[in-house]
Amino acid sequence: MEQLRETAMKEAVCSGNWTLVKELLCREDVTDREIQESLVLHKLASRTDISLSLVQEIVENACLRHVDLHLTDDNGDTAVMAAARCGNWEIVRLLMSRKAALPDNTDHVIVFLRTLSCSENIRDSYMLTADILRYSWNILKRKTSDGGGRTIRTMLIHLAAKVSCWWLVRDLATADLDLNTLHEDGYGVLHWLARNYIHSDVSLLQKLLDSGADINFPNSHGDTALNVAAKNNNWEMFTSLLLLNANTAICNKEKQTVFPHLSFFDFFNKRAQETF
Image (cartoon, rainbow, N blue to C red; front, side, top):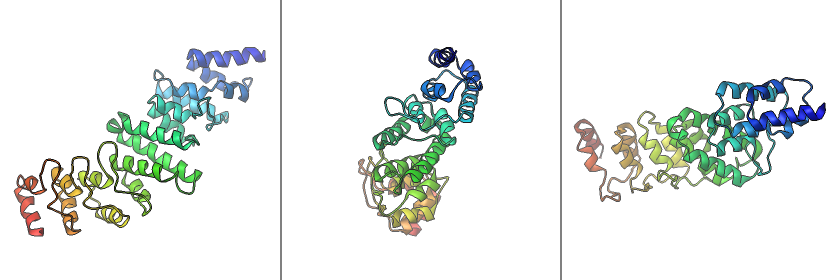
């Protein structure tokens, strides 16, 4: 009988019969060992053809059975990492909200963050990405005193800036972190802040500068934060950068300073010229 139960659970998982998996998780005669050995959450995390509502029910049932959310497979991946490799970011968020773990291996964490950074979801669903970053940061703070190390924290702050998760940028910005680096998309943290005209946080700008950010640091196009602010009509941030002595004479790779952008906006051009 035990062999039959074990076969039923493993077969249900391997065949993708997730409705049966959900039912088996509720049966008292299915042991915790059988559930663990079936790697139910890893298998679930790798599927893209299951409704989110069914996934939620299975995860909830698994948690009620005290399935080990930190369990790793033969590759050293947790269920969270397995979901990330398959681009199942909704499942990543769901598992992390249940305190599921990132891998203990630092290299795997870096792969996780790089996978997130390259995902279409970071452009299509900023809230989803912000939630995942928040859970990641909370996990890393609990696991290590330095939040996973400088490399991981640098990756986190770039991603947080990219999705306008400014509270996390503020939390991560410290003097020991090199803020004068570019993300793979060619932007630094200051450039993202200058681009975001909805959130012109002068106090955050000052904190970044106090933490070592170079106000004149160029992005991959040679644009400083001042150029980026002007290109994106972020005149409040533009003015703040001017008042903090941003250099107006720096040319980007197209040999342009900030001035050509101002000529298209008479009102702001007058305001900016008065500030010089």
